[in-house]
Amino acid sequence: MAEALANILQVQDWGMIQIRADLTRAGDAIAGAAGLALPAQGRITSDGNRSLGWMSPDELLLVLPQAEVAEALAALSDALSTEHALVLDVSDMRAAFRIQGPKALQVLMKLCPADLAAMPEDGLRRTRAAQAACGIWREPGGYVLIGFRSVADYLRGILTGAAAPGTHLEPR
Image (cartoon, rainbow, N blue to C red):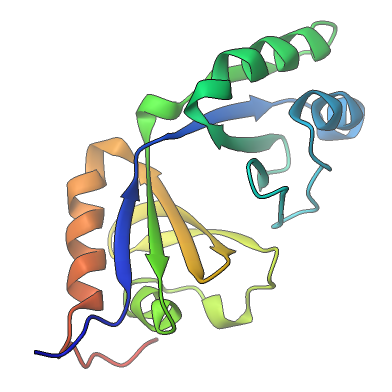
């Protein structure tokens, strides 16, 4: 039997914090509280344990171990206490998948209309995987895809299908 094009693994132990604020005014406070440099537009910064991704002109997503969420929420809330800001634990609203292997990009290109091959190493792209809204970034050995938990089964199914041996759809 042929081997899958990539390994698909749903990540269970990540926490995610949505941060909405005026990034020009509050960027230094956010970076200090998150422990990561503020990412440029369409980018993600990471220290291997935490990642801070640019989601929109006034929105960031902090991805970190689930065990660190409460402490990070407190630090961010304190750092932004004088700003008009939102700091929200969205861990239960999101699902994350790792797409690993030398053909991980091919798997994603079957599903996404975005030119992921042109995405920089530190890029974060909001797009769709088939009909589901998602965010995608690179990590060593592959990619991470996040989406709404309400469509996690759908995302798992389409990722697994696109990675299955014998699926010869040409990437977009």
